[in-house]
Every structure is written in structure tokens, then in C-alpha cells.
Amino acid sequence: MKIVVDRERCEINALCVVNAPTVFDVDDNHELQLLMENPPEELREKVEAAVRACPAKALRLEE
Image (cartoon, rainbow, N blue to C red; front, side):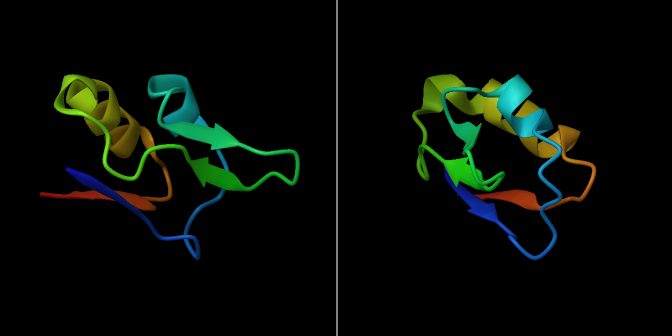
């Protein structure tokens, strides 16, 4: 699984951070940081929840 972030669409709502804090973070410059581009399978449920929660639809998963 690979996470793809559309930075043009990202509004830094941080709902992805709420759902998967070991995978996403927002830095001091208010920019989304992807801590793991290819998270392990055991985080799939949290990552999928983060993708669904994004109101800007800026996240997607590739297999």
C-alpha cells in the first residue's frame, strides 16, 4: 500500500493525523508530513479511515 497526497488539494484539516498519527503529521509550517509513504499492512484500517476522513479528498491509496 502506498499513500499519495495531492498537495494542491490538501487543506491541512489534520483529520488524517487524528486517524493515523503514526503515518501523518502537520509540521510547524502547517504543512502535511507523510511519515510513512508505504505503511505496514497492520496500519491499513487507520490509513483507510484517514483517507475517507479527508474533506478535500487529497489522499488516496495505491496498491
